[in-house]
Length: 184
Image (cartoon, rainbow, N blue to C red; front, side, top):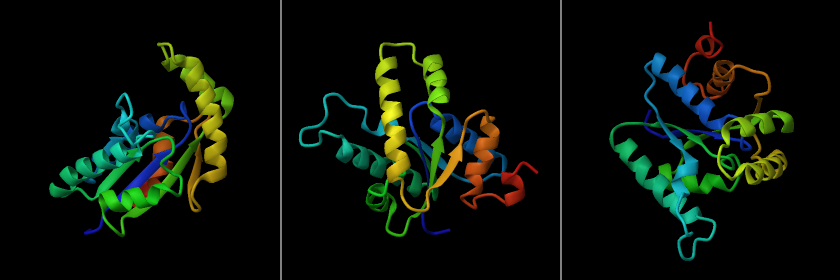
């Protein structure tokens, strides 16, 4: 495989993006499928925002480009990238610039009900950001539902085991055989 491929896993806070991404990595490792994984939330974690980049889009792209270049130099061609808004149409250009023209992009939007997202966030947020996270999660769920790129696969996470969600998501990529993606 000469061209790069990226699996974008998006969704509201509390939907399980990071957990599902790591479980997909477990499935791929079990099948000896070379890949890299990046939690996109960390690509722009700077304060204050860089001058001229109030939404941190430029620093995210710069960091993604540098990290992917390191992976690509070592022969990796598949990337799992988790980030809330990664499934929106405007991310295509960033991934093409960072990973090369013609990058194969698979978009998966993980979904969860408001009640499920609230339960998960209450269980994980131990600092002062719970109310802000809840508000942002509800707002972004609506935005993602309306604006996700055409062809984005939606995968519900309510009441499901992480391994089952991961199998469904990795099945959208063709990176492992369908029998393995379905747990056979």
